[in-house]
Length: 325
Image (cartoon, rainbow, N blue to C red):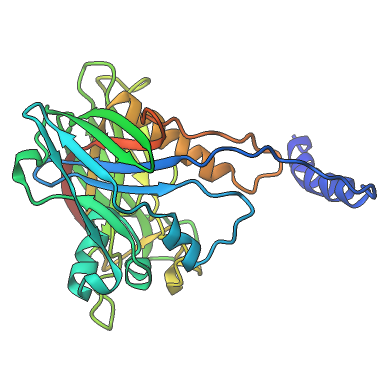
């Protein structure tokens, strides 16, 4: 019974010894790959479409605010068609163009870090034309024309599947810990195969300085699942508290990491997805989760964009709220 434990201890040591023992200089010529456009677009009931358009970057390019700002594609022609004819989306840029209140709203709607939105000019494509606002059961075609390229995709907003209930439960993983826990939900999956789900949450309680604890909805890794093995069943599930990328908040860098706690108010967004959208988010999580793993197998995110990379996703949204008490 001790063998697996010993292997876990010895494998890292073996890897270090192997790397340290390699004295021959090795030069790896990575093939040049053409730059591609990347789409991140969503549409959900009652809201306009939001599309973010960026370019792929070389692995060895510097990652700083300037390079991040330069990766966003501007002046593209982006249209969405729900069957009544295409509607061109407007380009809206952050930075000096938006007030702090507008930046906070843009962060909430797009999921982008408000600090990033305030620091650099990030451009998104959206519209105030209610003719293409999201409707359950409707199909939306996306077309992007930019930099002599044409990208297309199609998505449908599924019927939202409600959660039976949501609650907070203490994790009880540490002695005398009476405050930290996880968010739980109970789902009665419809008796039809092919339902796909994604869990998102944000703390809407406030800090001492008055700011909201989570300015955007956060999706922890492994948050997307399907009903392949639970079709027609009622079951309980839990999720950890996700963290924003590059977060410098104390609770994301101490013993509270991954936990909700007593006093939190959690806004839940339980999303129903189509098959292709599920495949993208699942493969994306696998890609991020395997980064930095010496023995991991690289996983490419499964795009549903023709002519480029990324995702155009219709979300069927069921909202709820958890009071952690």
